[in-house]
Picture 1 (cartoon, rainbow, N blue to C red):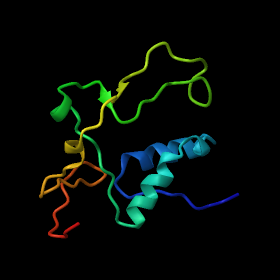
Picture 2 (cartoon, rainbow, N blue to C red; picture 1 turned 90 degrees about the vertical axis):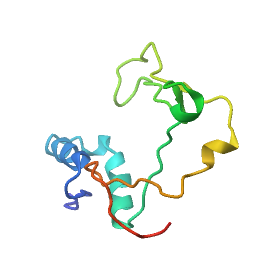
Picture 3 (cartoon, helix red, strand yellow; picture 1 turned 60 degrees about the vertical axis):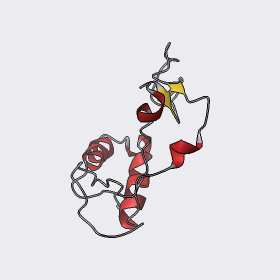
Picture 4 (tube, helix red, strand yellow; picture 1 turned 45 degrees about the vertical axis):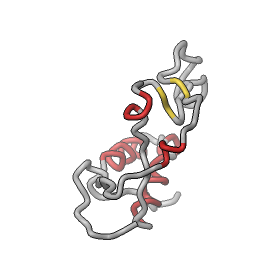
Amino acid sequence: MPTFRPTVPGSLPSIWYRIFASSGRAGHMWSIWFIYYMHVNQLYSVYSNLVVYTGSRQASLVINRMEAGLHYGKRQSVDVNRLLIEWKEEYSVFPTETVRLHWDGSYVESNRSY
């Protein structure tokens, strides 16, 4: 049995992962591997703020269709959000100063340029 645990100090997903692992469900949480990879390689994820451009909190780049399978016993009746149906170049224009956050939501204080 493997003993390595992909955890990130101070991250809430790491706490969730430990709970999953203690109940034999660690394989249900693929996201911890992504979080661990990003942490080890000092990378960041970009989250969209489409509401600024579209005026809608429903427009998303991805959605969870909540299909029957690992996490849901049957297909859920309603999608949480709607996929964005029109792309505009302004969506990929980033500000000069991008806000960077740690996993706990605190600001990353750095003069590192990206």
